[in-house]
Image (cartoon, rainbow, N blue to C red):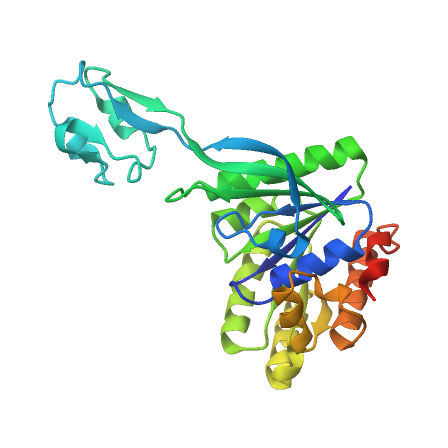
Length: 299
């Protein structure tokens, strides 16, 4: 079993468009949407939810008013201003750091689990999808990413799937770090812009720090060939292959509006480029390959 994670240095580079198309083309796989703060792969794949599991985030403090002496020590120590009038903990401000819990001389503070989001196991026409939704004002997304990946791996092992395709979160924060451990290939999607180059280098630094194999796909490369060449130079210096160059095509946006992966909308330059990208990925991961039968109706 192999795991491919699709990343980007920032949002809006076309990462989910690429992930959705790979979901059509790849056979015998499980898909995972680990962009749990703003999950959107399900918008393209139109899943039917089969199972829902509550996700419990970091425990939060709760003060037992009967045991509390009102000494003010917890109020003084809390750096998140989570303890309000009457020594009541405000759940949306508590970070679960446990400082008050350990400091309370009366042991009047307990740490209480709470539901921070939900994990969904869904069926799509392209195969199973594991995705999640984080609750309002929750910030344990790195932990939730790990839970989504764990469920996707469990499902892949049970069903004998060859590949896990993970639509990762943008940026370089904790959720991205949580996506990288144990992955076989990080495909970084970027754009030929100044900010695109900057963000590409940031995410490549992170990928290299965790000793992950990386490859790059340049989206809308033909909008700025000069910056495309600059991206290729960056990758060449790092000995990271550029395995995809996707041209600008208005049909991509039309496909997104119609909630369909673009590879289902017939042939054309961008579809041909996505097919070539998938061939490169198969070669790197040494997959047995072949096209998903579900992709045959894309034309």
